[in-house]
Image (cartoon, rainbow, N blue to C red; front, side, top):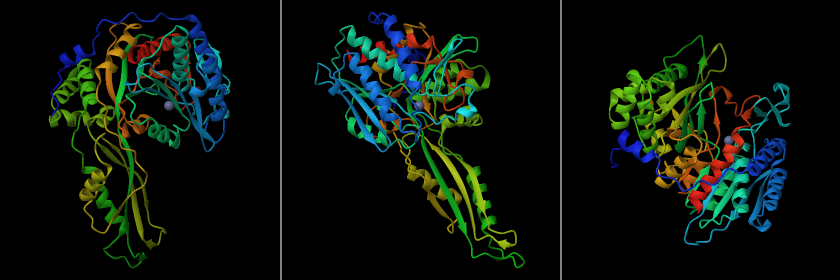
Length: 461
Ligand SMILES: [Zn+2]
């Protein structure tokens, strides 16, 4: 069993140890990063548009111009998309590679619905607008500019750095699965597509969060069938009535509370910053996963229930085929967000037991990718601490768990510790990833380059 990490111990672990002299911000690298970001947005890399290979070829030309050998940069096509890797060989072959993970594709954007053309980068006021300006072309652009800056400054990594950009993160994730197989055995993955900092609405930095675990997405269908018949001759045995009882039993069930290093630290730190009974429950739950009263109180909050336990909830209902016929079939879809480390089969078995109907069938509808939580590594936490301190000294860094579906799950599945720790800070009201009029603060660009320079420097030097 893991030792209980108190909030004090955790604070000590997460607080600054003296940083090595941070590399200086480079205005030329910041200008290049903004240029890369603007030109990246102009590539329409949504599914079906077939622009990922052209975008990858252009990114390769930027890296080659930045001093990286052409043969260290490889595009691997897959259907209309593909992945790009750049390998910067380290001087110490005994050290396993560090992987930077990002993605080149974007969620589809319909120009009709946008105020500005989604694929024409526009700077207006303090913001750069465009599809992908945040997700995920921001971190990809600043990380590329950071690598070029480091190379120009004469940095030589002792640990090999691999930049791995997937090409269908928002849809199939087939390029990610292939990348993870190829990079199996790497030391760790730093993913810019997740985590990041929060500003208050008046622009003050609040917290930085990084994710070291994510839940598993699974959909199940519960079906009841029946011979049916004429509705004027009803019988006791009715598929809809039977399914209704199953629904009641599933609705009443809660999976047991669970914890990992990231959720434990999340509740310890968030509890210390949250007033009243809720903050108290967070601290108690962080200290004792078996504190049922605290777990139940947190589970009443939509914001927190997913960090306390596996959740399964009814999402769709189908039944019957005519107004004047007895139903031949009734079925229920249940969406689960499974706590990392818990097997999908075990959740299916539990739901089947809870539903307790020997005549029903239970089907798994998707192909879940389950991944274990990553360990909370001191080297990673220290590197983030130093990179954040260079910008906002002492800003709280809150470990967290994602609700699902990032490239990290594929890397964790093959055993590589993986962390979502992007450079970007934003106000909650600016969060428009996947939505309309996506935008980022232009002032984030220089800071983003600096963040990744610091991260690569510390973890690969
Ligand atoms: Zn993304």
